[in-house]
Length: 418
Image (cartoon, rainbow, N blue to C red; front, top):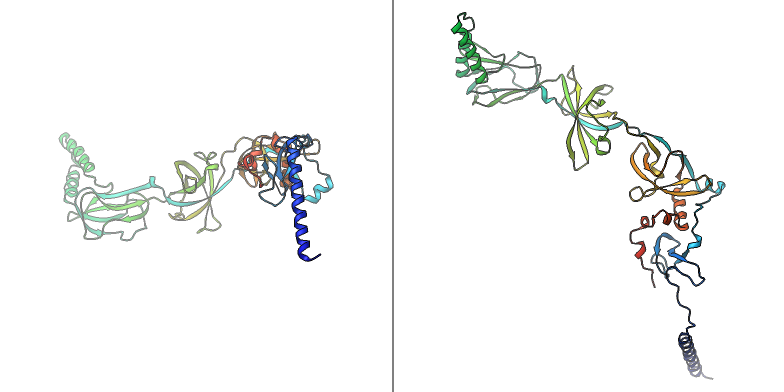
């Protein structure tokens, strides 16, 4: 037989086999003998199927069989009779090999100490402004540079202001009068000086000029005029800030602001003054939140008797807010999916591991408050919990918690590959 004859024979045989298979399928289908692919919720063996899953990605559930969209392998059925309420049992020796470690969830309060940055500024309640309420000419400046320290009553400048000079001369002339009409005029002259805005402590000099003095002890933070300058009414001449106390504005995270109140004690350290600590108190929590970093400013008053603290200094602030109610505390790393239906793995009295849904609160110092789901005293898996959680997903324990959605919002609608 030639090669051509052999090829023709093989082709004819193949066509005959295909025709036979097709005829058999038609015959079986017409008589109802062809097996039908199992649908969701059933299996050819009669066992109920909860869902199908990929063994390499057990958290993704499918409602029908097929090939995994992740791996080129068939999906595996999860049978209802495989789901168990007995938890995940792991032999003690294997726990040690897997690095499973448990801790007791003890009731308590989180360490409420807050450490936040802050900036020193002037205490504006001690700020005083020396201004010209009438037209004047600056004859001489006794303080010529900003940030010079001054004492109350110290001369700041001499000005020529005819309106002030006339009113001040009149008040001085009536100062020693004894008659009743003169005393009435003396009171009127003082009221006139106040109305004209002559700064307290000002005194007249020969030649008609007036010396203006510092109203408080502090620092001249701003000088608004120079010698020989005309100062129309309303001109700022000097700004004087007291230094006995300063303000510290600290940025408090929103999570910690609830425990900060008026009078909360603080301890402050300043980079420019290493080794020194300053005690203070919270004066008020400002009703404004920074939308950029989600912090709220606290105004803190610090004593500054020697003037060591200056505006603009950067500071580290330690606050001791009011403690909150006690709740079971667990390591923050023990919480699985902290942002979406959080849960922890609990070692039960039956020596098996169970996932437990919890509602969490604040976190700090590596610990997290559990507001509900735990009572305290439970043994919580602090390491190796993700291995147990994966096994719990396969065993159906997470479904019984109502947590199928935690494995992905679209898990129920996922489609396997044909």
